[in-house]
Length: 218
Image (cartoon, rainbow, N blue to C red):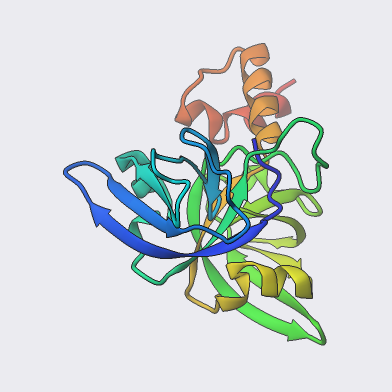
């Protein structure tokens, strides 16, 4: 589990396609001296497993076809920057929100506006996951825990403070950039439990709009 508090950024040293999936090799941050084989690391919001030999100057990961199809990792090239977060250790401060590292979708940056020392980012809101996004709720974008500032049809805004802007890859984004999205997992559990309680089918068709109809029925 992660919290969306990025602790380092890194550059891609190698991104090699395989028959299925790919191999992703990142430069190891200087203070990440104890990365263990099998350790979970969130790479721009995607939970990956460190491969053997990752305790040197590089950290390597296998990336599955499913992950490539659901995230921006398939488009990474040498030199690209990524956000990194190690899994939460017992007793650590819980600074963000519950982030599983399981990306739901990819969305576009619609605009970036600077307001003094702060920035407002506008992102596209996909119809398949918009029901999980609520104003003042949490959302993870490229692995960064953020708060939804405003919500409108087909879009939402987040406010970014200077530390987050400079300490993550968000500062390099502009209109047209693509980011990984993970919605708040608590909303998914609530929806699934309600659907089961109301006897709705547990499939994509049942989830999309079925819950609203059931709740509205007498």
